[in-house]
Length: 258
Image (cartoon, rainbow, N blue to C red; front, side):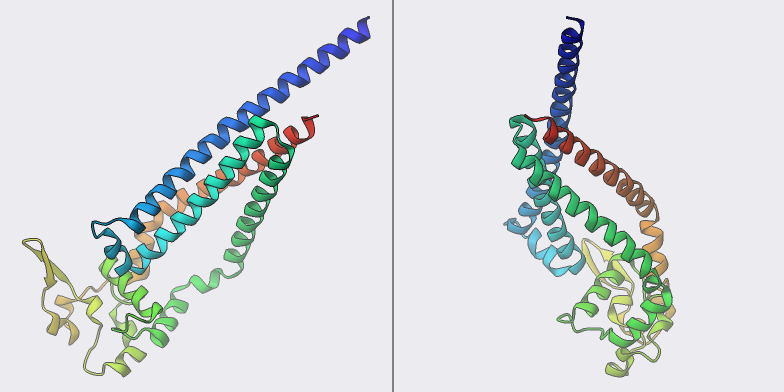
């Protein structure tokens, strides 16, 4: 009789534990589902927006790429949250297994990206970017992805070159445009009555320090994103931890379902 009661009590505790995991996993994945839906909504709105915002994004390669990254992340989180919710609430072993495999793939991809970032960290040096700028930047060829991306960076951060405007000496830009010391994207702009124009384009192109941006883009971008880099690192650790717990919960629920 005592053994039977102990066995029943153990079974009841296991059932309560399984039920707790089930609802925790549902709430967790419902939040992921809502986050994915929000990102998808923002991405789709920007792509199909009829008021002209789409043209502004399309003209800026950084924003254009960012929109599609948001769409991809939103779609992935939407699918992940949906599978997790359905698998948990319906106690469907097939959906739980698919959810586990999807999180495992994402986890391994993130781990591989971190390893590659560490291995190729020397490619993020000033010297590397300076060499690439000298070899590939053309100045006004917006059909070239490298050139248009650099123009977007210099216009966005009001900077010039990697370290300074002197980076264009001996570059392919100077070879293509022998009459210009720096490209137009380096010139300072004034905002007057809602219109943006150059302070003095001709003086800037001829090399005048008064009418060009003299700060290098490497420092400008690092200064701007310094706080975000630390936040992104902390978030990456949190996300990896959550993914590990999600895989453990999914497997516990998978094995607990009769």
